[in-house]
Image (cartoon, rainbow, N blue to C red):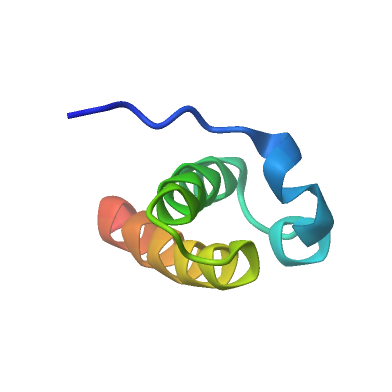
Length: 63
């Protein structure tokens, strides 16, 4: 399995969506979004999908 390198610069235009996230959730969202972009999703769609999944991931890990 190939590791996806996360690049925060790739998602600089999405600061408004990412700014209120907890650091762990933001990190996870950026990792997920990078993977989605690598798979061919448009960056805006990837960020939205990744944030939703990262928030669920965080809630599950805290629960």
